[in-house]
Image (cartoon, rainbow, N blue to C red; front, side, top):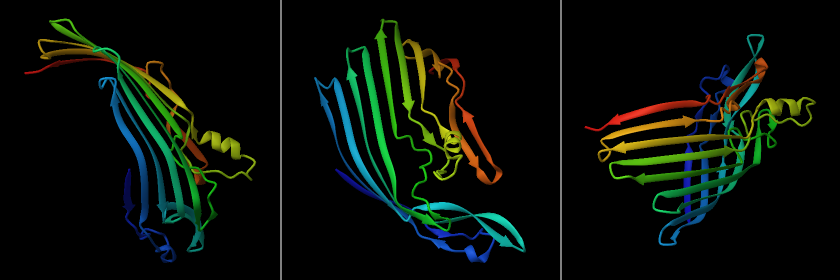
Amino acid sequence: IRHAKGFRAGGQNLRAPSPTFFIPFKPETARSYEIGFKSEFWDRRIRLNAAAYHTDVTNIQRSSLIGITVDGQVITATVLGNAGKARYRGAEADVTIAVTPELTLAASAAIVDPKYIKYSDLTGDRRGERFVGVSKSQWAVAADYSKDFGGAELSLRVDYSWLSKAAFSEYNEPNNPQNAEIIKATTIPATGLLGARAGVKFNDGTYKLSVYGRNITNNRSAASGLAVFPLEYAGITRQEPATYGVVGTVRF
């Protein structure tokens, strides 16, 4: 059982284009409550850890894009302020199994459910907006195999990780006829990545040689994105392509 408190410092909007918006904002505070366990059994060949948590975030610091008039011209400005309160609930678990002295299997999973309890600023009620960069579920599996053949030791690894979809923009306006299209354009789809590595070392690890592959299936879906609505722009950065390499090491 654990309780923790953290904060993000407050400040002032000293770079605002008008003195009217030189307003201070309070520190953002997070209080987290966690309960879980760590265990080992089957002669310590199985290790299982799990935890559930609840986090309350108050005085959330969020940016608001507003339109103001300066010298007779209407310009947009970003103002940082305290928008309200959010809560996060989630759970995570991981297990490692030493199937044999040579083979080890591992798996992990996590889920999170974020929600705005209160969220409003100069632009109005924003409780319906999305959480940026939050995948509500994810999991990963891996297998490691190592074998000592006397003069050489072989090691093999294969792993796969998966993330559910995530928004890269807070946007969510159900009354807008284009809402579904905009949400789709500003969402990173669920994706999975496969990797593998094989290596061999000689002379008690003095010489090592390994080959590896990352994103072996060449998944080029979106990895991150950027939305700038005043410019009507939304763009993505794709996953790096399938990559293969060879690494050699000599220890002196």
